[in-house]
Image 1 (cartoon, helix red, strand yellow):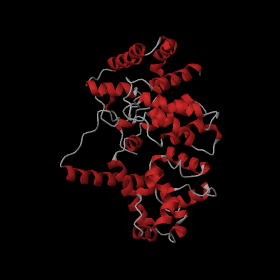
Image 2 (tube, rainbow, N blue to C red):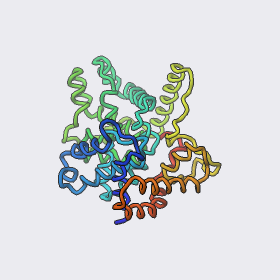
Image 3 (cartoon, rainbow, N blue to C red):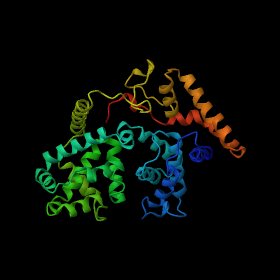
Image 4 (cartoon, rainbow, N blue to C red):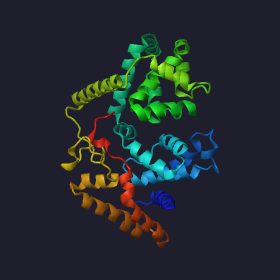
Length: 351
């Protein structure tokens, strides 16, 4: 347990190193420090002297070091905080967070992939029109675009908008059914307050849907509201698939060509024959995967050696000897730790 914590702490300290990522005008760490105290302000564990304040900071800083190409974006703190609350262990929460961020949809969300967001908006608007035509028409009359509220709901898995008890219910469904549960939950929220929303003008609609939901909100009533649509997970996934096709065709018509996946995108195809199976559970280090994609090599051994070399020698060159013990611990932990982060999603279709 101590060595696991040491590894996360070490990665967090590495986030200050220029060789891991290029600082913006306002560094990721400064934003993280500000966001930690703003995350679930009603919970003392994330406030000053709280039991998880430092853990939340270190988890997010470690992720910046682990995935510098994605870095930190506001909203990640709520995802990480939920995992810390449930798991109560920084190492387990980090593994879960890194794995979650490797889901194609979440990677696209936090890479600010406009095409992926457009597919979710299209799916949501279509289902809203089918299941609640009166409310859909009212929102259009008021010129309230679903982007105004749906972006934040999806971006944080409703963690910033719903009471914690309700949000945890959605998390249960999300981890069971995938991103389709998020679309269904968004529809369920509108269904719960449909009568109220039909009376609102644009200002009141925007204020209600972009702000925190009433504390009196019941997870059981929300679940009933979601079930009332009789929408299966398969149906929503199929709707998402169709929406992605429409968005891709629209993008292709606009640009005249199809854009290849980014070299840093974990959704990019892997190169080895062994990994061509859709059922293979790949557990490579994301850092090694990026090195492989950039260098064009397909050797697991060489990737591992490169990863170890970058993690150990570069840090020794850039940092003082006071971190030598931590560096040794990290060198020992890299292999088992990297195997814990699940990278099975690159070879699978979006959920």
